[in-house]
Length: 131
Image (cartoon, rainbow, N blue to C red):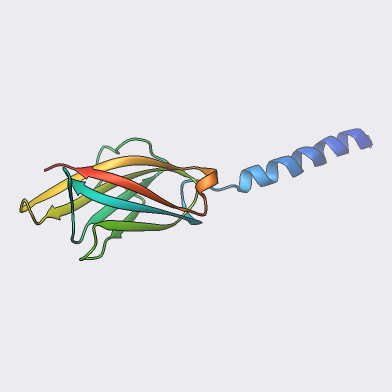
């Protein structure tokens, strides 16, 4: 028959590990939001922008147009894209847009982190593009 001390140790470990194992990061289902403001040089891009988001990433994937976890489109009359319902974690955002002033397609990306303290906030991120 196992000793009471061994049972207490097993119980303590189980209670300690269950909350840690259930914490989700780098995913949707949270209350944070990234407010990605798209620029080409100093000019904000106004118009539909497609944003490809890679979860748990601190650098650009080898092909951000095929290796992504979430695809979000911005509004036609805004210079930003909202990525909603995120959890704390690392995200790489890659934008495809059209600069209506320079009359050319542009693209670019940025890595960002939502910290635990930002889990219920909107985070502004300036995403710079090139042609």
